[in-house]
Amino acid sequence: MARLRAAIVGNPEGWHAGRLEAALLRRGAVVRRLPATRMTGAVLSGKGGGFPASAASLGQSLADEDLLFVRALPSGSLEQVVFRLDILHLLERRGRCVLNGADALERSVDKFLASLLFEEAGLPAIATRVTERTEEAMEAFAELGGDVVVKPLFGSEGRGIVRLSDQESAWRVFRAFDLGRYVHYVQKFIPHGNDDYRLFVVDDEVPASMIRRGSQWKSNIAQGARGEAFSPDGAMKDLAVAAARAVGAFYAGVDLLRGDDGVLYVVEVNGIPGWKGLEAATGVDVADIVVERALARWRSRP
Image (cartoon, helix red, strand yellow):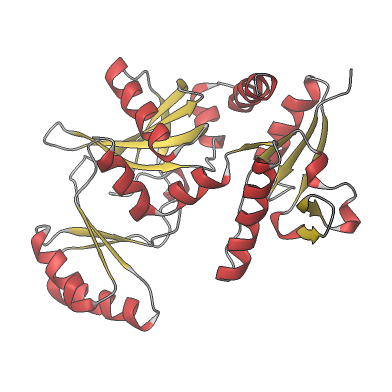
C-alpha cells in the first residue's frame, strides 16, 4: 500500500513543524516541509485546468500530497496573500486534505469577520465597532464606555494591541491609524483580572486547555503570561467547539475570557494555533492528537 504523503507549509524550520513531522513519521508518512512563499501555480490548456505546485527546486507538486498542514501564511502584499490562499483553495478543490483549509484561515485571521460569525452563531462576542474614520472611531470610543482595546484587523500573540482610556490618547492613536491607512477595530475592554483561557479544539473535541495568567491586562503567552493546566467544564468546551465551528476550523486555539460580571466571552479563534506553551503547561502531545485526527479525516474522505 502506498505511503501517505504529507506536506507542512510555512516556517519549515519551526518547532511546530518539527513536532508535526515527528508525529507523521511515527505513522509511516513521507513528509516534506516548505515555506508558503515557495508555492507556484499554473493553468495548462488541455490538462484539466490549473494545478498547484511547489517551486521546481523543492521537487514534487503539492498536488501529489495527500495531506497538507498550513503552519504559517506570512504577511505580504494583497496579491501575495490572495495568491497563497488561491493555491490552498485549488488544492482542496482537487481533493487534497488541507488543514486548516483556506476558508477557515480567511475567517479566523480576519477579526471582524470572525466576530460577525460568532454573533451569527449566537455566541457571546465582545461589543465591537469597526471603521476607517477617526471621527467614527471616537464615537465608538464613547459608545463603548471610554475604555477600549484597539486591535489590528489581522494579528496574533497580542502584538499591536493598545488599550485606550482617555480621549486625548484615543484621538492620537486613531489619527496615526488614519495616516497608516489602517482600519479602526475598537472593542469594549472587559475587566477580567488579567486571566483568560485557551482551549485547544481538534475535530470538535477539547483535548487540552490552560488558563493564562498575565501580569498585565494582556494575557498572551507571547506577552509574558504563564500558562497553567486547566480543566474546563462542559459549557466552556461546548462554547469553544461552537466558536471553532463558526469559522470552519478543524483544529484551533480558542480564547475565552470571563469578565468580572461572570459572563464568558469568545475573544477569538486562532486558525494557525501555537501550542508550545499549552504543551508545557499540560504535558499533552498536541501534535500527536492533531495528526491522529487529521489522518482519520483523510481516511474518511469521499
